[in-house]
Image (cartoon, rainbow, N blue to C red):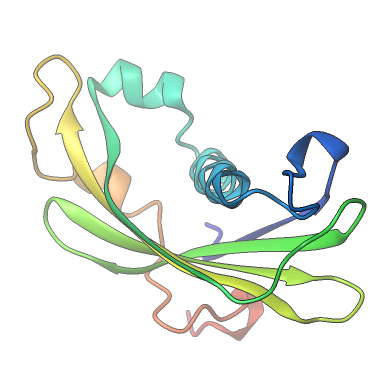
Length: 146
């Protein structure tokens, strides 16, 4: 199980807006990529959720843009599950400029587990819960007590 998921990304020209920096909506896209990647790395792709008939949907995003990113910037995008409740979880994100280690973004998403056919909230099945370690401080996997 991967407690903290990370991936690297280099900003592309298509991600730049008229102000010549990364568009705010692109940061949100990267957050969703990170969430999907973390889920898949822990054995839960969308196909797996579809077979279960249940999946995570966004209830709320909170994003703090701390510093802009520019074309060709090398980034490190990180996510982890901070807390979980019977039908929800809170996922945190950080984005850093890899060369300077400057933090560009701090964010969170509250996810709700729902039945895919009705869209109604439901309890997170145990088989899903055990796949995602709770990581309150975003520690690297090797730093977590087992």
